[in-house]
Amino acid sequence: MTRRVEAPRTPAQRLSPLLLIVLGLLAALTPFAIDMYLPSIPAIARDLNAGIELAQLSVTVYLGVFAASQLVLGPLSDVHGRRAIIGVGLAVFVVADIGCALAPSMPVMLFARAVQAIGGAAVAVTIPALVRDLFDKDDYARVMGMVMLVMALAPLVAPSLGGLIILHGSWRWVFAVLLLITLIAAALFFRILPETLQAHRRHPLAVSHILGNYWRLLRHRIALGYLLTGAASFGGMMIFIVTSPYVYIELHGVPEQYFGLLFGVNVLLAMLFSFANARLVPRFGSERLLSVGLTVQGIATLPLLAIALLPQAPLIWIALAAACYIAMAGMVLGNAMAGFMSFFASMAGTASAFTGAVRFGFGALAGSAVSLLHDQSARPLVLGMAVCGLLANVVYRAMCYYGAAERVSTRAAVPRTGADGAGG
Image (cartoon, rainbow, N blue to C red):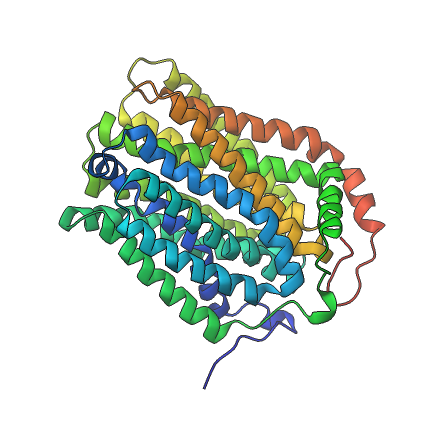
């Protein structure tokens, strides 16, 4: 008999382990698509007769298309429902996995990665909207924090898994394994998850309506502050993801099979702080924890700036400074998203699309910038992360933190009725 997880009706039923695992696995597809082949980037460049810059571009192409696709796919989830969009996204992702595995040249690889990003975007953009269908702000922050904790297992194990695969075979098998993971996620999704967006809450398919909703998002200064805060912090993570294979493997001679272990330390720290955040949100609230996470992340930029002044910093210094920055992402990203989404519960799909597009778009721009600034040193990595951490703090203090009174009055003016939970 098919088992389905019903929409929560009481506090005790709000989050089952089964629902958490399925949501986490779906959300983990894009981290797997990005992180599992990171140790293969030098090998892909050699095998496809391309420079390391083009191989790194396969990461930023994914991020850029992933970001842009969400602007269309998010509103479509408000029109057609969450289940249909995720299902189509999984099918596209499967086809692209095969294309990447069989790519004969770098242009084909880049095209397949772009298609893969469209499928990944359809899944990723719908998950926060699906969760927002079910939970209010603090519960949303707690649940999304736990989903991020589960999905964080992907970048924890993915580079190590990718390193082991290329140790014993071709980098093409990395995408074959990704295909298997995608098929497992699809099977669990169709078996377990129901539709969470009821028919009476769906939006009409009208371009003017979609553009109007995006205009509403852009006009909300405080919500936009949360969005830009999360995007800037996330940009620092993307810079590390794009440039760390070169810095660790090529510059400092770390074997490909050990790169995943060093990379995984950062992910493990982010997981621990994400878990702590989920436990602490009910007691302290997402706002206070976001402020704490940003403050610590801002302090972590100081050693990054100091390292940039050195001609050749030891790898351990770079690793420790990056770990301090990335650890705080476990507190910053979920709470920043919760702050943004709390204003737009009545159009959660569009809001989720916008936050994903801005966050990953900024990440793609940041990653592309440091690739273009490649100077055969670790300087682009540490300077890029430092700039992103400082920018996140400045934006939050300027647009969100000091607008607390306005934020409270704005929410008080919006009645919270019905299953939707908020008027947006």
